[in-house]
Length: 330
Image (tube, helix red, strand yellow):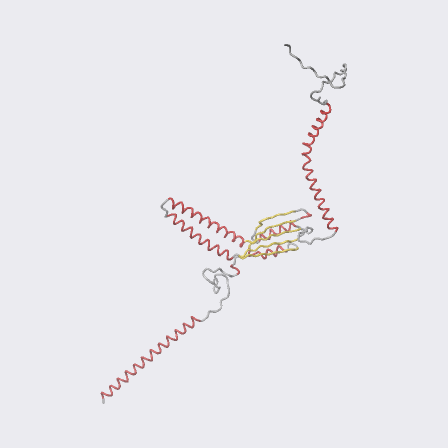
């Protein structure tokens, strides 16, 4: 009886221990599965929407690929070019104000052509301004007088700039490899050929870098061509009138212009005519007087003229008898 009871107790104890062990394992597995599911949920959850910001700012959108260009507007390379026509009261004063405004904005004057004649006062300025101040400077120049024409042109050279950067990097690598090969050259023929190839690669690299500097200058500094006109100056864009009086005025202007040109040419030739024409005319007069004073020359074979005041030879009419030939003595 005691032995059976002990066996029953042992079996019950073993069953109890086994059940407890199985419950602990299942709980641990459930905990691990729960933690794994939570981690997966955190990893798969979509991040909050990031706001667009400046380059380098947290939450700013990154490039689409490793070599793709940045497509944001503030990161693109754009060339701005403007042409303006403004009519002002005082051309010189307006030109000074325009130069002062551009200089204050950090730009400079690339060209300055002025005509200060009151009837045709005109000034043409080529202004280079920073691209960031382009719009503000254009609006400020328009306030100098009455704006009659404005033309703004843009050219996006972002892809060209990115292409130039890639080509420059590749060409620099080629130049470096050429220099390494040149340093390991052992024969004269290899040295000469490698020097020629290296010189060609360096020239290509210099050309690409020059193009990049040119693009950088055009994108960093915009160009504004400003034309300032006086109040009474006419432009080619103005409509032309038709009619008899208009044709008469045009013809009279052409006639006056032609006469002015003719008088100008005559005034330029007059000193030469005086210096060369007067001696030539005097020489011609002297030659004519000398010809009048000198007697005409007698024809060949004619008898000599009779002496002045002497007896006149008899005049024989009819044919003259032949003169006998002289015979020699025997």
